[in-house]
Image (cartoon, rainbow, N blue to C red; front, top):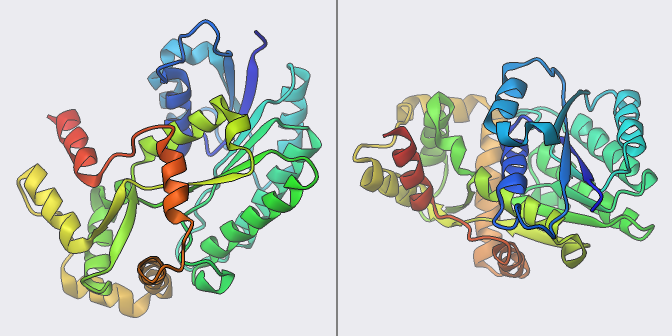
Length: 322
């Protein structure tokens, strides 16, 4: 059976690594009738520790991974990569993950990168394109207060438009990463969201591992998921519930910066305020029935794998670090 080449942007990040691991370690990966996959992992620095650790983590499949230097801001270089892979037997798939531009930054660069990659997927007749977006704060473009969310919605619409010209797109929409609560940045997130959100507001949460599993499942059954949207969340919890789950599993309080510091950050940072506003907007839209397709999109993702709850994710983390 011919090898299926898949190009992955953001390959050394959370989602890219989770996808590569899931693709090579799915329950059907060793079946004789399952295609062989070869990953072309695009990264700005092929000699970086992140690139090296990717190959180390997947050492049993290192021969199936090619690290290629490429910056998605350099359209000419990315097209060279597409040409290179095309000459190696064609491009079966593209998994597009774009870096978060940062709080308060404009999303123009992200939008330009996404449209360029989608255009190339159509030009090179890629069989399956999976674009990783995000669960939107609401059904309308005006619901997106933050530039990155607006850019992602525009890229989604661009994919759909090219679908009419033959592009087999699938959009995956992850929720708020559970990993965002780890480390020092996690303590900032806990403090800011505890200070800024209403008590009843819950957050749609997702483990990056599950994003990888869902994306891998889409490529393994690309015809079934063509022109579909899959939202990925293991459930929604308020900050009170998140901190209670953490204390129950870990046996200690969830790390958080002091409330006065969180208040000050919210006062000074429009980007932080916009994140809070978007979570609030998403909650309001969901509870009012303004996002009627969300449950259907989540159920579609669940046909690929079980989506872990925040508590399950914590238990795995505890076991890993014990």
